[in-house]
Length: 358
Image (cartoon, rainbow, N blue to C red; front, side, top):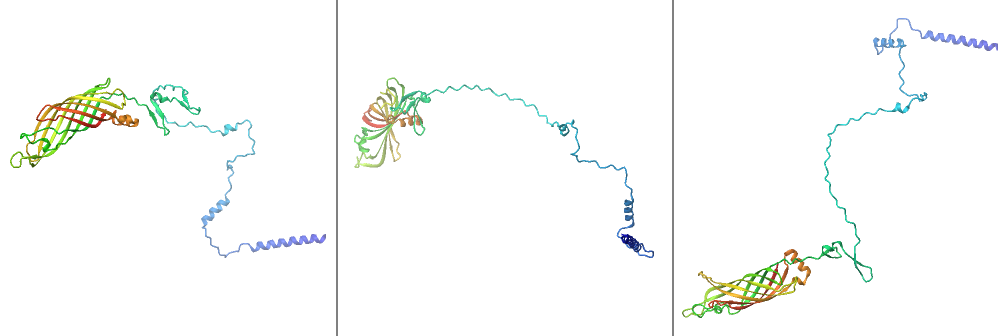
């Protein structure tokens, strides 16, 4: 125990002398000495020394705490919602001009008619099919096809009183004799029957039992031939000149048709009146043409056969698209009587053609 005390005291003395020796070695040397250069000037060092030697201000206030202490007790009487609420700012609304309401017209809407159960007209033999009355039946609806086409019953007013007829007939050659007493129509032109084209217009203002009206028309007949010598050794021989014979009958009379119902299949008729036949003869040698005429009278009887009555669709198409009420085939016989003996056209004319009512 005694040795340990001496050892501790010895160790303390050695440590003290060692510390003194280190202080003696690090002490500043006496001049002359060499001052080391530094990259900072003396003014900068002096400022740094001033900063280090400056005494702290005792009046500096600690920075204000921005954080919220969650552990701090809050006042229970304080309303948190009021504290966190943000005052609402009134929105800025631009003033708009006042809108004047436009008056809306009041439309009277009629109430729809109540739906009615269709009336059953009849049933099939087994009862599986019912035939009902369609709402359009009152307007003439007759049937509805499988493809959706509606078939209506059309009303034929019968208000048509105009008729036009085109006919072609054959007329006997006129009996004309020249001034020499030998040359006739037969020798210059032809002794056979000549074609006669006729057109007649009828206006029928009286539509009681049958149709009665006025008939007016015209026709024309053309024949070509060669001239004849009337003197000398060549008398009666054919000449080089060509002749054209033209006859134009003009007719005006009355007509009656026995037609008492619509879509009548057959309609007989009679007509008659006066006529005037103008005749002109032309030559190809430049000579002045000659013209004469003769009055006369005519009477005709005929039969009309209604083509449009044979097919309903054809009749509807003719009436709706072309305004033709009836389309007939006409067969007639006309007798012509003239009153000039030198220009005799008395003949019977058998003809046929087309007649149209509109």
